[in-house]
Length: 235
Image (cartoon, rainbow, N blue to C red; front, side):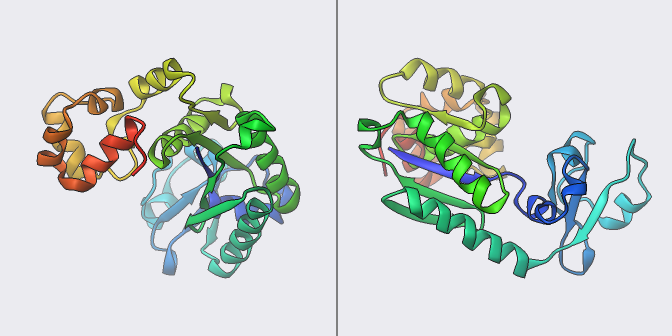
């Protein structure tokens, strides 16, 4: 079993850590030289602000409330990233940092002493109390399924930011994959999305049901490995 811990709206959340007055305000972070939007808080997303919007367009747009804008501060983000990863390492036996705000955790056997989702909530509280940042946690028997679970943990608030896909509950996995758009599969880019859509493949469940040989022909060995992982085979 793997867990994927991912900080919610990382850059924007970092800017809010030391600004409690911005807790429920829409915040965006701009790229180098303030070119375009590279991060949005949940409140900014609800206003319809898209990733990559040029700053000059955002500056003149009309919103129901003021949007707080920050230039990117990579020293701050790196410092808080290191703190988050250190806190995750304190609770997991083996870890693999994937990006500045994401880390995979090897959680094999942890269910012998604590329920997977209880452990995920423990991770969330440990990081929140130590850094002020909120993480989402997805768990699964492969890294790709853990990534899908983590996507769902953010997409649907009823999960409370934690979702475990376990071999003992295949119906939950099937339900999630039937609802997850194929473009949300980890590693499926725009070109592969177009190929799959042209074949009538719009959900992850439909992709996972394809013959392995067909996937390899369509998306090379990398796509074939992703396909295997969605079917529970760790690659």
